[in-house]
Length: 81
Length: 81
Image 1: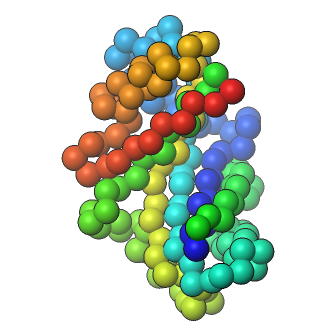
Image 2: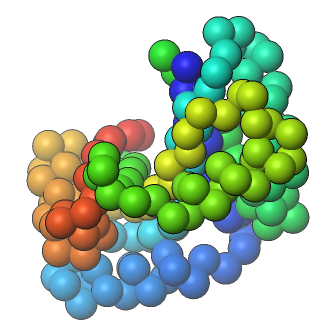
């Protein structure tokens, strides 16, 4: 079983990396197409577990303890496989 | 319309950040649960477009030109909204 954790900056928090990427895309000729760019992390965790609910609970603890900075970041967890 | 681009290291490429996170999770008491950790980027692009197929084609170009290093990284693109 696998957990896919997406961690991104909260709305309103300045996303430097996203802004820089947006600017780079503009200069590469995508100016008219791109309105905004946000960049986050995707963490894929292979788990030794067969209980989806319990796994999700443990991964939530991982996010709160380590994977996300909950002051400035939001996370969502998807359990697959 | 929004493109969600997930960029991750190819299988076989050493993922330092994933290894370090795995080790940290082990020391935090998740040793029995976690088998492997891989870390990638999630890039969310707001697009001025209403044509899903054309948007996907343009975002593929963005990946090849800027967003992914195709020597060591794989990417997948999902168009939503």
